[in-house]
Length: 277
Image (cartoon, rainbow, N blue to C red; front, side, top):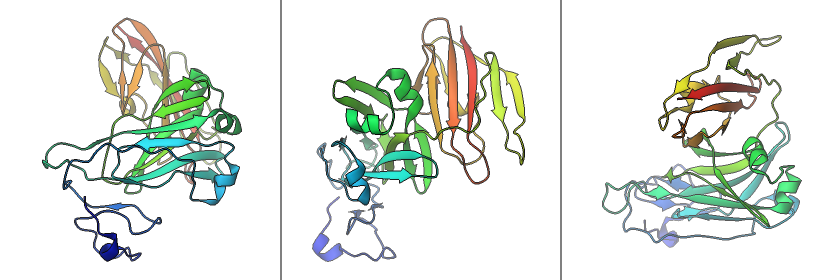
């Protein structure tokens, strides 16, 4: 979408943003454009520039790439209370391409070098990356946790998000909060319910899934409350967006959901063993 910054720039967020996609300053990302004026070229960016005070705490340059029409430089957000560190990029783009019907699919990749992984205390192995790092896509104040793909290299790790949609998602990748309560069942789902004292648990039988079929992650393990959720799986199954996909062979998969602490619920880990037949 075409933007005339000379005439449209303004820090007044109460003004209408109809037919615009972008921001007047580095403070906000706004995109109310439903349809692109023309199909955009794919645009990638590499940067070691940060826009906040935590830049000095990053021990080595990072880079990000995206096809968003507009995006901020990456920032590092540190939450001392939750003991997490996140790389955050704000993006914006029209929801549809110029034909008004084709969804504008987005992509996002972030590179975390070895020194950043060491600073975040994340070992550069597939198991450690899946259990200690997670991605999230935030739209209109609501965040969805996703499971990215990790590509391990000699000098660091590429974190590749599944396909995203616009208009203005905030993309994050970072460490998963340490859980205050972890329960695992070898044959069932263990659900932890918040109480003023110790959390009681309820156990239900583990589900089964046909070979090659898929099902919703939240149908297998239902989150409780609004805490940020992350997923990981072992045993041959894969996570594709919000679904668990079974392999084409018989196996047993173990799905784990971690949910961060909120004001009303404590952090929990829930695990289910799934029979694929």
